[in-house]
Length: 619
Image: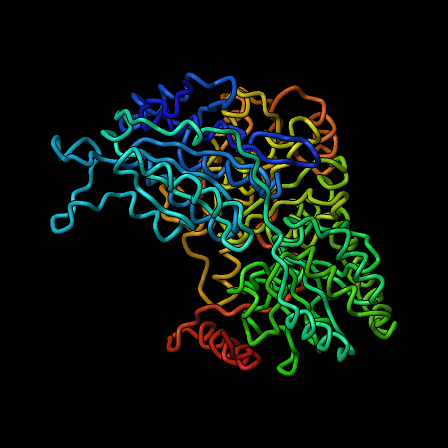
């Protein structure tokens, strides 16, 4: 007689279920969960680790150095895999769990799937208060894991072993749904992990998941076609959803055949290469002048797969008040923003249906001709800004130009917070699609190196992640340099040392506040004339990496060639200018004191008030 149940602990059942989930990528059947980033401790070391140890050859566990960074590595992996494959981040109870809340915020803001498994306190409460437990006097059922509720698309706490039967399929469905995609959190109380339960055998049958491609309603497609046919100066904004749906080629072909210039968001950058004939550069605050000028005169904006955050829209000052929006998005929440004509569905399928329904319609060729002229002018200014100069230290633009020149087409540039987001969005010339990752949905300092580890794991030797970051981000989170050396996942790390938090110092001083607590020289330190500078080369070598300091752009070019040939993670450092920035892009709505004794601040306030007059009103 065939057994219909199998007796397993909750932790064993959890792991067995995850091991039997599959997906298809480019025709190949692969595990849906590629592995686990884990740090064991109080709350997961006795039961969850026991279950993971048994399947380590099928579901590998990678040891991180910090719970936040390993969860960020899972985010980087999900990006590199275009949301088709998922990593797990597992932690102990208490601070191990709360360390991952920031990473969950990154995944949530960027709509990326990560499965977070955190230990939790005892449901039976018999040993309370336990080590690392935070007690809430009036609500004893609350634990620190409730903090994940605001940064999770799916949240659950397993208080009975049978709850896995419903919780796990729901978690996976959420992570794989383009409309709901984001992190799933499951809390694992210590006493429930150990309990055995008779689980149905069929719960563990192999399942192959497919990412759904929802189609839009017919009336939405009709409305979109009608709006497009009325356009005289349309403009496409390509977001991250274009890349995740695999709509790169269709959208670029659509743009060319219909004569519509194409710009990209930060998350969408890399859908096409830098010299694509319809492309006019990144959009918004960190975008090109060509994109800004076209946005200001566009009458119809076709926003595909973007949540239209303020860096894309210039805080909603970039567009004409009369401009109409066509928002194509899998999430109705995003499709309906700013009184847009919504088309709710998968980017690839919606574009295909709209394209078919447009018949032979095309925009006036003058629109594309003007766009190509503006973009050519932008590239001339880009060349000038990237050219070597007699400056004492190079600018970000000059450093990026050298790194970009030496990068192979299959290498992926990875960066996040500080000055490099804007500088790479403008200056990095994408050579191959899907080789650019700027985490700017949450603008998380510390993502860079951890995210690079995730990319290195996902690329599996097909190109190298080139991580660019400032000295501030390096100091905030660098321990996964050691992780990559241990695990054999090589990346190249370029540290641009400008003496502190350079870009936020620019914002501060531009708004009339004297430099304060951002650059090291403006901070409260013991000796402002002779304070020690970090030796990034010595530090990286201490973690087992190869490393070299570069005194010039010529040194950097030679070092990049060397770094491409090393057998492990390689760190290059170079001093960079804290005051030289690439011009261009839209403005930004920021706080400015309404009253101040300082004239510079009063001037900044007046400029902000004038800027805000251009804002569109909407939701």
